[in-house]
Image (cartoon, rainbow, N blue to C red; front, side):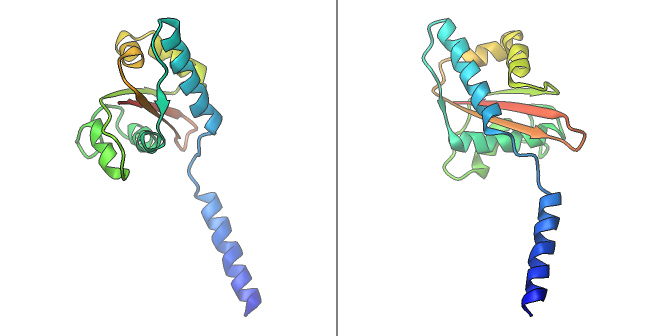
Length: 147
């Protein structure tokens, strides 16, 4: 009986391990966060606060933009409705999305070189959430949510 239980546990572990989603290295999120605040500091803006609930919402959005690369969600609602899926999450007032950049530096460079994205980074927000998703082809999708 014990052998059978151990076999079932081992089998379940192997199955779950094979199906696990990409978990961004916290250093990726931290590096984007630091680059955002450095960009803001360069022009005399205050630092944003990294919000864990916004991070969770941004992670949902990062996976969604691998399906539909738009500020509209695959369910045809606006990006900010994602906050309803994370208990206690503040509703974001701005969103930056990007795809295929391989590093935090590359995605930040792309956002900084795009006026609309740059404006979101330097705007009068207080909080930021950052999400990264890797699809089955190894492509990365990046999201910043601001409030």
